[in-house]
Image (cartoon, rainbow over all chains, first blue to last red; front, side, top):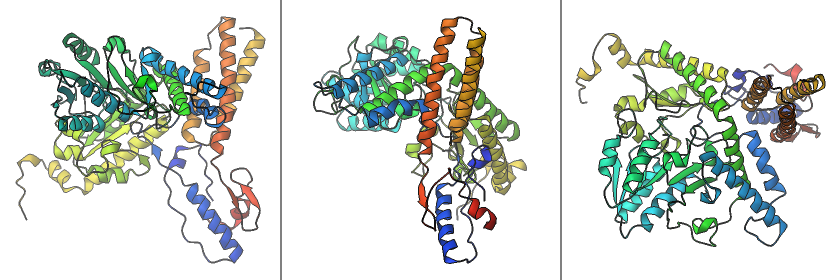
Amino acid sequence: LIKKNNTCVCANLFRSKPSQRHQASPDLNKIKLIKRHELEIDELRPLYMDFQATTPMDPRVLDAMLPYQVNYYGNPHSKTHAFGWESESAMETARRQVADLIGADPREIIFTSGATESNNMAIKGVARFYKTKKRHVITTQTEHKCVLDSCRILASEGFSITYLPVQANGIVDLELLEASIRPDTSLLSVMTINNEIGVKQPMKEIGQICRSKGVFLHTDAAQAVGKIPINVTDMKVDLMSISGHKIYGPKGVGALYVRRRPRVRLEPLQSGGGQERGLRSGTVPTPLAVGLGAACSIAQQEMEYDHQRVSMLANRLVQKITSELPDVIMNGDAEQRYAGCVNLSFAYVEGESLLMALKDVALSSGSACTSASLEPSYVLRAIGTDEDLAHSSIRFGIGRFTTEAEVDYTAEKCITQVSRLREMSPLWEMVQEGIDLKSIKWTQH
Amino acid sequence: MAAAVRSQVISLYRMMLTESKKFPSYNYRTYALRRVRDAFRANGALEDPRAVERLVVEGQQTLALIKRQVRHTHLNDLIWVTGDGRQREMGRINKYNYFAKNDDD
């Protein structure tokens, strides 16, 4: 019997259930039934290469959170007893840790339930607060779904929204951005690092433009915080969304940075007892907030080490794949990017079938929130990839816990599977013969 | 570095590596081993005794953390009842002894 022994990477492969055993005595049958159940629990699981969807919690974060889950369970807003005081002091420590990571003041951090809530609060809150004078909001076409959906709701309330196109490398055109700012623009929302293609936007320049025109700048920094150095003063950012589970923290918590000087006013989405400066009422979940704070302080310590390692691993992956396979395109700008998010399009191969072939590696094509639909990702469409290339894109996510062995295995598996799928593909045959696929007139049946 | 401190650091390093090898999760285990090794290598040239002492204290706290987390992540193992009614804890007793001979895997 192969014991679950995790010392080699092949032990992480998905393994199918053991076949039917021959008939034996009833006692033995019962034991074997239990063993099969145990094996099902003990099943070898795929390698995790999807760090943009979510990240495993760092053991140090879990260690920081556990006392607050078990022993120090007070409500941080209880002012009258020790349970409340110790919980509040932990929450304030966490707030300071989050603020230190982005160069803010602790009073400017609001704990929320995640980056989606932070995005909703920022966009709807700012737009609605200034709605008497300012009715225009600008965003880009490659934003996260929650930003685009919030803008859609605002449009139904009578705001006018501009969705800026991006260039073929995924970066917004600064002149176009400046030209679309009107006198009645209240908010501009651009995400710092895109979660699908990993492209880094020129936040300093955008901040400069917004500050000069008197427009508030909101950025969804969920993928960027803790991975690249961020300073809200340098970037001239007024609102920033932070997500806990993207930086090796717990799921279900995030933060919103709201600048105090010059003051940004928001209309709160969630009304109640006035917690979190009145902007987000509700009990702050102390263990989650402590986890977010710990994750932020660990990210600050480990940023350089992780950055070097992730860049090295990403280069290794891309070099291995592109040296063996022709017709592989990296989506998004090659320089202005975060190394850990690699989005590759394999021509003449269907993305879903490649994902199924790579079933012992956990990957995704498109972001987690759009993976349910059959349409190709809107981000890839916005950067102008052809329909067929958009369908064959895979996103490799590399993070703090990825090992060289995992990257090598993924690269080799990818190469063999893509070659195998291409062998089966008639389009590939035609390309090998030198036929230009664009010139073919496909007949209707 | 003084000899006593040096031996203390080396024993701390060895203990941290031994504890890190006990993580059940592949990713945590490899990360802990790698990070401990790289951190000790990076700080290997330090001479200031106060800085060294501070790092040693931090190392001891991290060692305690690793021990706790190894125990916590092992808690996901289930306790199940075998056919003869005895309770066995996964991963502790060599439960495959009975099956090893009869099994054709």
